[in-house]
Image 1: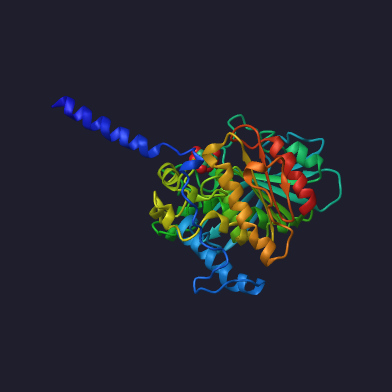
Image 2: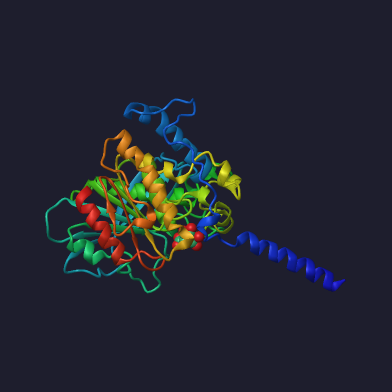
Length: 392
Ligand code: GTR
């Protein structure tokens, strides 16, 4: 009897393992049938900027909001900025440090989040600004940044102001506790809604509050603003910028499934895999598509168009197959049609993914793939900054 149970248990585990095994074979990628970016729900072909902005863009936005990411509420009652002085400035020669506490009130409740902002001490003001959404928890040794991942020194030396916040200060990056930030405090009515605010939306909301701070800062040129995210916060950066047109350039590094990469390719991380491990990142509705990607009424190639004509940049790492580099490139090269066909930009990706020899920097859209593993490195920043020089 006992051995029968062991058998059943082994069988169940083997079946579960077989389901979880990611596909890394191009020959097993299903033939791609993608919803057309330019065909409206009522069957109209969208060809003009006016039709794009009044018909198709809002349709696509609503689909992503309801079926993938969930809402980012825009309302609150008041906001206040306070400067703290807790951490020694690691770059006193070249930068000023502002530790900014942003307190937002709604319906009698309040939440405070911290952003760390570095401003160049020299150079021509107002400075363009780069915000990195950092999913890493606050560093235990009290550091404000990790060079490479957030290369403050190099950015300051190139004349940028740069800021960051830790995602956990608005919504902890954990299934059990993600509501213990703005979600339960400021927006409790979102809880339990199938398209309600989840962790990505909360992180995006915080990026918007950082932008509110930049907009009123005399030393910052908020019209030259760059939003950067890596991996889970790359996904977040894209959705944030789709919600908030104040970002001039949006950079998603290795954002993979639910970010840059096409879900319907089912290569590497799948919708089921991401929803199982991170059920608090996306709207609950996204789970309807677990192992049913073909039923998604959209795919990630429709996301860059929500940001257009503002610039969008993606990057991949060769060994980061979990994020599906080819799917990321396809997402952008197909999505860039909004830039070229609606906004008349020189934004056509001519090369196949397999033919890429170096970065492809076009008008308002750009891509690079570097060798190595999943990470945000100085090499990524350096290549991205070349795109920035041409597009800011
Ligand atoms: C992975 C997750 C990816 C990506 C990554 C990260 O575990 O499966 O979607 O977001 O984490 O954020 O580093």
